[in-house]
Picture 1: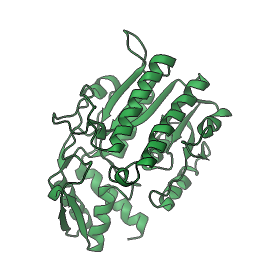
Picture 2 (picture 1 turned 30 degrees about the horizontal axis):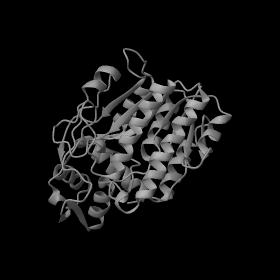
Picture 3 (picture 1 turned 45 degrees about the vertical axis):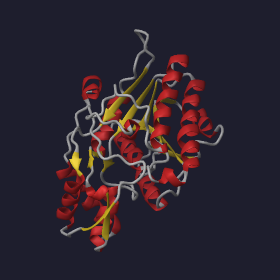
Picture 4 (picture 1 turned 180 degrees about the vertical axis):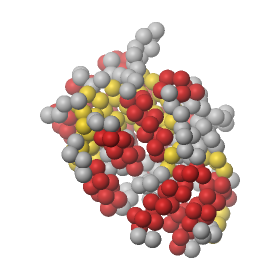
Length: 325
């Protein structure tokens, strides 16, 4: 059978599709190649995936009525990994309508298509560490409340979790939500800090440090995230004990690293000194993220392996090669 991956031309979707193909799965990708960032990067990822005969790409818009259902109609698909979304906290301040359309309506169209088919064994979908909002308790646990989002992006991801639980309860759609923590690595997005910092440092330009650089993040290497997604995909939740067949897990590195240490590793990997541009805290941002992965370890066997000391140089090496530096 075949796995359908939405957002297959995106950062995580690309790496997941490669890993699924490597273990012998057939993969159908679904992506709209949105110009939120340089489409040439998405086309390059898709071209890499297209080298494998067991990969097919379908271009379409998730928020368009019937588009996703039509993509599934003539294909022998039994599992769906839904990664397509409008990302970015700051972009949601100026383009809120995009987040409602893509993240809310798009997610609904995916899960409704799974319900209508009736033969989807498992829907795995991307949530985000952003759902924890202004929570002060660290590390963030899946048992914590998520009712105080500080960005519209976070609110859409929390809403997707609620909709998924309701669909699982009412229509027996097995679903697992995965809260990703600051994913980074080769083929990453140009709007993320690692790309922005590396590019600026190599060009001798200032790097923006919000909250004066007094931030901490649970940076998680993309290969570890992909391992967690596949572990979840292979373990569809079961209903029972008055619980719906719906689970939510954190996928993080279980290390809260200072942002300045992240910058120092980029400096070391590029052999260039950063010019620091310290700026105030941005609306919708949080000072610290830190994943409690106890449930992920217990239920999924999830165990992150890559420290930023190793992951950052790998990205810089890829960045130089991709950009011909």
